[in-house]
Image 1 (cartoon, one colour):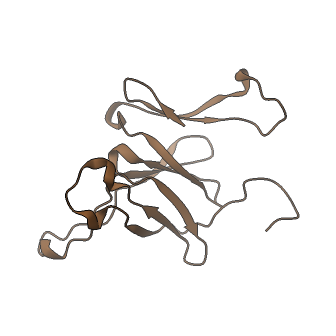
Image 2 (image 1 turned 90 degrees about the vertical axis):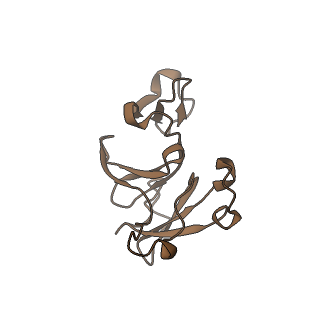
Amino acid sequence: MTFDGAGAGYVYTLPLINHPALSDLKLFHKYQGADTGAGPDGVAFGKSGDLYVVLAGTSKISVLGSNGAETARFSGPAKNPAHPANNPLPWTNPANIAFNNKAKTLLVTNHAGLTGLPDPSAFFAIFDVYVKDKAGKLFNNDDED
């Protein structure tokens, strides 16, 4: 993953082979337009075949299908306009994600220190997001679970 000077973000694939060449690197998904500045950051591979991508600059999580097309997007905890004092902490520049297989959720870490927010309680929060998915295997190895 990377992003360019114009703020577009890119996710690439690279086959698991010895000595890959530059020509083996393939564009999987490009974040642009409304996603300019999204900054793809942490990723997690789902058992479903989906790829979960943290978009740190926009405080969202993008879900990419096996063909690279976005299938869903999460924007953090919902606010309660009737009771603003009870609003949950917002996602603020989330950086990393990992699966909690037992609960079928993603654990999302805030990296709010980069945003300059005055409230230190938001800096290192961890959110639990139900995605009805588990962590996928990174390699096809019959010896691993």
